[in-house]
Length: 228
Image 1 (tube, helix red, strand yellow):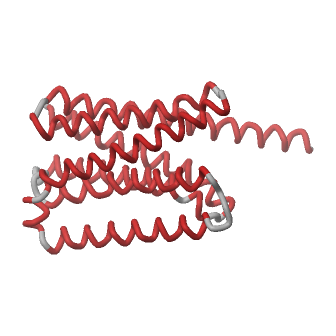
Image 2: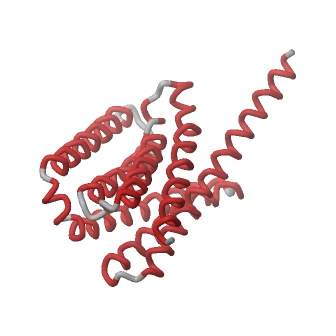
Image 3: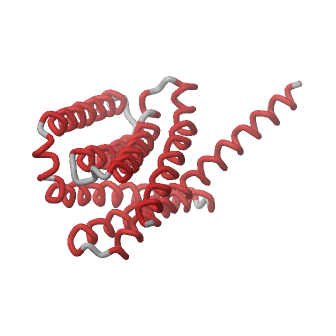
């Protein structure tokens, strides 16, 4: 029963992440500017992580290299998001170059670790429990930075709709902290709290993205009507 619930949450989370990818890829498709790639990359990798988790749970191979492969996309998703928000803070002439180099380096490290896990599955399985705590601490650091950054942006604009964004990232951070607790003492309450909080965070992102997309689309239609 618990496995069925987890599979359902992971599948639903993956669907939401890929919908978010679709929403957030639109600015890049319109402008072709690389700085808009960070957000769709981040949520795309979160979706991939949820898909791997669902497959691992269904097949019963969660203790194997599949566990390692689901851990990497989630961590690098938060790294992509943190790098994107960092370079959006102080745009300059060097920002596109530095952003591109940073993303390229992250992708290179990610591919290298995935290949290492595939070529050496025994190391991936044995090193998962030890390394998962370090990876999730990295996730916490990234989410803490993103939460502070988005909260500052909300305070500057004082737009009631933008408060949902830092709130959603804070939920992601609490979810990661709960998973760390689960890794230490195997608390089922911490595990399911992490699952619920992560799903609630993604639902909040979906709400914000849909609302923003709907508002922009409605504005475009109104402008076209006015022009005609």
